[in-house]
Image (cartoon, rainbow, N blue to C red; front, side, top):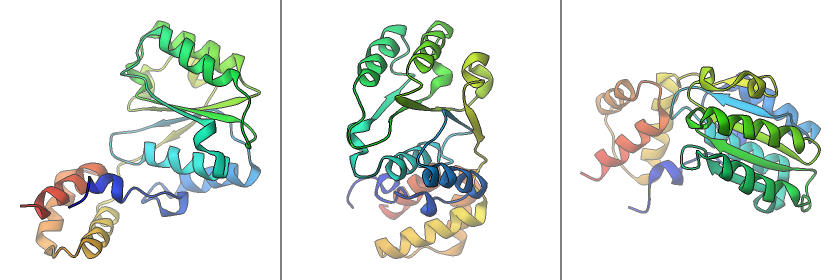
Length: 207
């Protein structure tokens, strides 16, 4: 069995993302326009925030997405220095073959208030050359000046039938026989968290 199924079956395009239909429709408009405001993706774990961000980045930036994209986990890099240095250094460079650069900051709700204020200043400074996608579980932990600079998208837990459909698709691809009862149990246990569902399925398949 090669690698985590969560990565192997992570949707690469916006149209392949499971659930969150209204959000995807709005994001596809940004792709059509070739521009986007700062975005905030908020909602529980495992509902597609990171997957959606990566798919959006690839759609908007095209073949040069890697050169114009910076991904940071804000909970690993809680300090002001990381925000200042990494983001500053990235934003100072001109976009390569793309209209602007994109910074994806995950788990922003784990940043200290001071680091959030530093982040807000960076967001203000580089409005012409960069857009930010911020991801968090709890938007209430984000300072108002950041929230007011973002279009906020609230991700909901994924519906049980949508998770079940995805799990069946993975089973077929992996040549793994899964019974309905087993899949129902996984869906129930996952509580709308696709990542958890796929991880449990892979663990069951390897037993």
